[in-house]
Image (tube, rainbow, N blue to C red):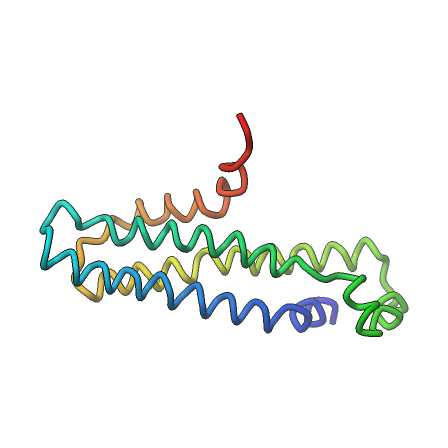
Length: 152
């Protein structure tokens, strides 16, 4: 029940983010691939996926911030905090479930849009990077992108 409640709290924000993150980079790859094939030839072949990855990375950070907003303060404003706090579970369990649900959603927001963008690139006949390179980009996105902006 806690998992379902955690899902219900963020499903609208998650689905809107997922839809936007799947459509916009895929459209970018499709549009850039068509323009590149006419103008530049082989030297441009990896550029659309790199641009799409940059777009997904920026959107992913914004979506994760959007997903993690809320919590008990939002529930208190909506009037449901008393119900949540009266559940027969420890507060640490409530927080653990919420954190794990958000982590699963954040991982989904990285994997699904990148997969859709990669499939669009393959379907349009562009010279898409290898699958190992795509997995490398996903690893960078989910594991390193938060530390890219840290000062040295």
